[in-house]
Amino acid sequence: MKNLLYSRFWRLHFFAALFITPLLLSLTLSGIGYLFFTDVENRLYDDYFFGESHKEEVLTIDDAVEKAESAFAGYSTTKVIMLEEPYNTRLTLSNGTKQKYVFLDDHNQMVGSQDADYTFSNIMRNTHSSLFIGGTFVNYLVELAACWTIFLLLSGLYMTFKGNLLKKGKSENKRQKSKRLHALVGTIITIPMVMFISTGLLWSAFQGSMLADIASENPTFGYPLLQQKPPTSDDSEIPWATRQLEAPTSEGEHAQHHGGGAVRYTNDSQMTIAQLEKEINSMNIAKPYSIIYPSNGEGVYTVAKASNSGVTGLDVKPTAEATMYFDQYSGKFIDQVNYDDYGPLAKFFTWGIPLHEGHLFGWPNKLLNLVVCLAFLAVIVWGIRTWILRRKKGELSAPPQISHKISMPFIIFLVILGIMMPLFGASLIAVVVIEFILLGWQTKKKLRAQETK
Image (cartoon, rainbow, N blue to C red; front, side, top):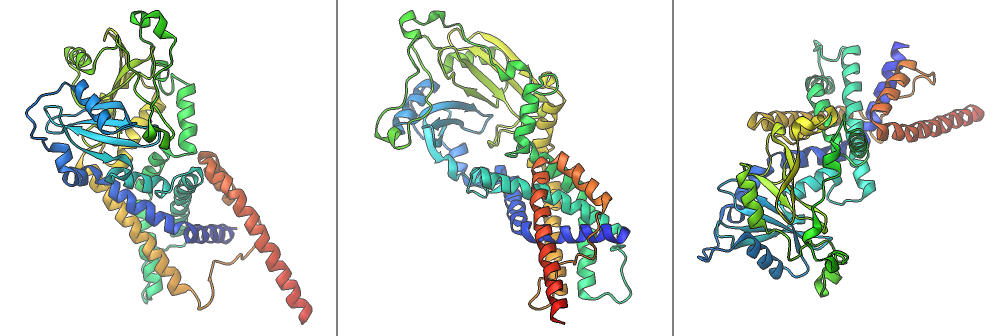
C-alpha cells in the first residue's frame, strides 16, 4: 500500500508539472516583475509622478478635471487620487471600456497622461493574472495552475520524506543530484509558497469570487453592510424637474467608437472637489486617498484609503484602511467603515493581498517574496533537468501505473484539496477520465499483444 501511494503521487506529480510548467514560469516571472512595480514606475514615469508643467497659472482641481476631459473627448473623470508629496495628483478617466491616467502638478496643471492598459504595473498584473490575454477561460486556467502548484508542493513534500530523497548517496550521478536539489529546495519553500499562493487565490476569478460572495453575504464574518450598500445623498437641493432625468452620457464619435460608457455624474447643486477637500482637511484625513465621484443623483462622494490599491504611492497599512462617505450636495460627512469594522475574512483579505504583492512590511517582504520566487524557478529547472536525464530517447518516460488498485489515503488527500480549492476539485474529474481512457488503451494493447503470441 505504501508503494502504491508513492506511485500515485509520483505519477500525478509528474503529469501536473509537465502540463503547467509553462504557466508556472509565466506566473513566477510576472510575479517578480509586479513585486517591484512601484520601484520601476518611480523611475520609469519620473516625469509624470514628480514632474512639473512649468505653467504659472494655478487652477482649481475642478478646473483641472474639466480641462483633462476636454483634452480627451469621450472620457470622463471617475476618480481623483490625492498622493503625498512629492507625488503629483492623479486623475482616472474612463470612456466605459478604456481608462487613462492624467497627472497634475502642484498648480493642478496637466503634466502628462498614460494609457492605463500599458503601464508597467498593469502589464505585469494582467500577465500574472490572465497572461495579458484576459477572458474567463484564461483566468480560470491561471487559477488552476496555482491550485495544482499547491498539489505539486505537498505531494513533493510527501515523496521527499517517503523516498528519503534528501540523503546524499556515496556515488551520486547527475540525475540523482538534480533530483536531490529539486527535493531539497522544494521542501524549504513549501510553506512560504503555499502561503503566497493561498493569498493570491483571494482575488482569483473562481475561488476569489466565491470568497468575496461569502464575505458580502455574511457581514459579521466579512465586509460591513455599510461598505456594501453605501448611504445616499440628500437630493432635496436638486430642482424637482431635473431629479427624474437620467445621468448624462458620453456623446460624439470617440464615445460611440468605444461603445459609450460611464461618466461622472454632475449637476449645478453638487459640491466641487475643492470644497470637498476642505471638509476632508477639517477631519484631518491624511493623504494618500482616492476621491470617487457619485454615480447618480443619490450617490455619495467616496473617500477611500486602501492597502492593496495597485497604484504607486497610494497604498496604506492594512489597519489604516478606511472608506468614508460624504453627501455630494452639502459635503457633510455621513459615515465611514474602518479596518476594525471588518470581519475575520475581510481582515484576512486586507493582510493577505499586500503580503502576496510584497508590500505588507516593506523591503523585507519584497526580498522574501523574491527569494522564494527565485528558489521556485530553481525547483522547476531541477525538476525539468531530472526528467531529461531520466527520459529515454523517443519516450515520455512517465512514472508507470504499477497497480490499478485504489489508494484510499491518496483519494482522501485529493478530496480534501478539492474541497479547499473547488476549481482543482473540478479538474480532477478530467484527470480521472483521462486515466480511465489510458487504462482502457493499455488493457487493449496487452490483449492484442497476447493474441499475436
